[in-house]
Image 1 (cartoon, one colour):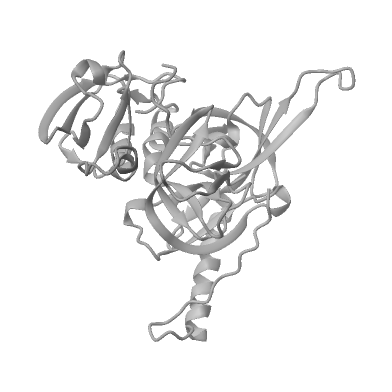
Image 2: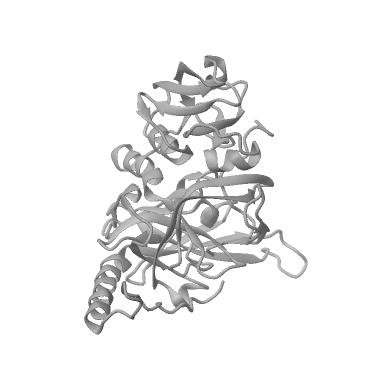
Length: 376
């Protein structure tokens, strides 16, 4: 599968964007202290909001933060380098990220890049100060999400919301551990700045596209990776993942809807078997850059195929645009991925596609995705 689809993960700490997108640098939200003050809110006539509104807003943020901080954990990974004449047991390197509890039975949702590699230990710091060892149960570099399990049964799970109901300008807060555990569960406030953002970053030595991200001006810094982005109702609507380092207040989160099928599978079955079609693709917004604005249909543009995969065998071809799955329309790659992740290996999946202005339909039987597969 080497050279097939270059997925949607992130690994480099600082890289340039491509595809004609605004030149910038991206950094994993993993170390700089948070130092962003809340901006004044303006009323329609251009004046500042009154004291009553400001107090009410502060109380809402405070209530939300108090409710959620118990569900946010710190995640530290330790790797041991090869032994040397100076260090007989090798040296230790440590990275720090965040995670959010999704079940009282010990399942924690975080980013792939927080636990990627082959760490000797994954240590989880709970909100009450307890430190326990965790085990990475599942991880996906394309989506930059992972599930970690701890043998603790009295955790406080967060409530998962619906990212599709968010609007530009909606207030949100980000919770995480910027810089180190010294600043654990730091809360920052902002708004949803944009929806369905696409950014290009290298991962595992390949150029990858993260699509459908939520953009926020809530301060997201190194160490915030894997922490929750939360709406005004105290529901998790995203998992903080990356920021642009060449601009102020431009952070991004993976929509929680992508994570939900994975979380639900672990809660019901204790595992998740990812389905696989062998398709790599991206939204029309990205394909317009790559294909020089050919005006493709809404949906997911098929940019690459695994020639040994089930989609290719069923008749899907590079250049097709998938517009519906099982009769349900999909506006972009992220909505297609959300529906697809709810499937299981062995399921028969009906795809509707546009090809050269004509509608085509195929039925594909999903196989099980292996650890090195890219795309869906």
